[in-house]
Image (cartoon, rainbow, N blue to C red; front, top):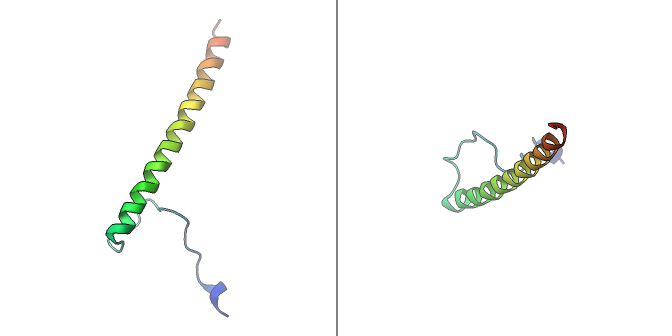
Length: 61
């Protein structure tokens, strides 16, 4: 009945969140998720840099 009054929990890891309440298993899961996110961000950054470098090579002539 009052479920809709509870604040929504954020999805995924929250930067700066208090980690002391998490178990070892939860911390390991969090590290895995953060590693995957780091890889995803790195791939996007690499792609954007390649696009920018290609544009620079065309317009630098």
